[in-house]
Amino acid sequence: MTIELPSEIEIEVPKGGAEKRVIPILVGTFILVLLVIFIIEWAIDSQNGLSETFSPKTELFDMNGDLFNFSELEETPLVINFFASWCAPCQREMRAIEEISGLWDNRVTFIGINSQETDIEQAKNLVKETGASYTILFGGDGDLLEEVGAVGLPFTLFVNPDRSIVGRYLTDLDKDELANYLEKFFN
Image (cartoon, rainbow, N blue to C red; front, side, top):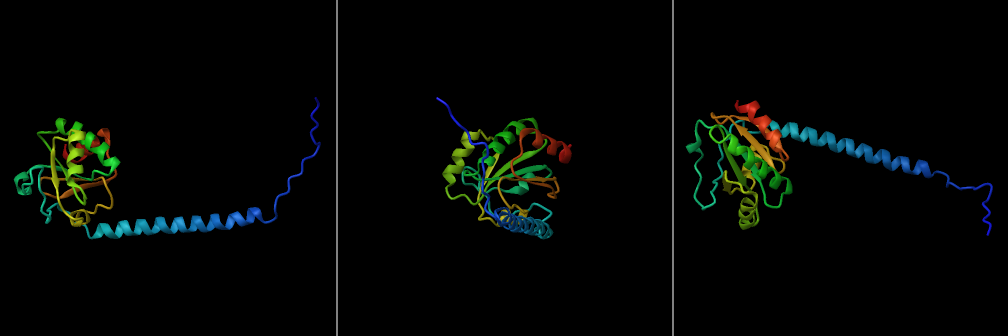
């Protein structure tokens, strides 16, 4: 059996094909650049209206449904983590916070705040699954998140004993990152 291959293969490229693809790519790139500029400007503008102190006006409740009083934590640095049960990065971060909280237990108070949850029981189940033994609070309809400048979850605040906010962090922190921020802000 013999297979003969043609000596020349001609491929016909439609005229204007490359040019037709360049325009959508340029338009898409232009839109992406505008979107990035818009997000950066929005983030800068939203930072201007942020509270520089942590003094929640929203009532928050502990796992037993009792109203939590932040004034009981005066003179204590705080790490406040906002989370939701449906947030996969929040779940990872809660485990990291649990690991670190034991090492910093006498020097810093760790608090998890579940806000905008549709099912509190799911949030309570997440607390059990992650083994979070630090203080967990529930409540708020997003006002507290807006007040502290949270634009997504998870969101973590680092708060001095005088209640001044010294750090804000969006997205999940792993154990090493969290340890570095604790050293930076509270050591």
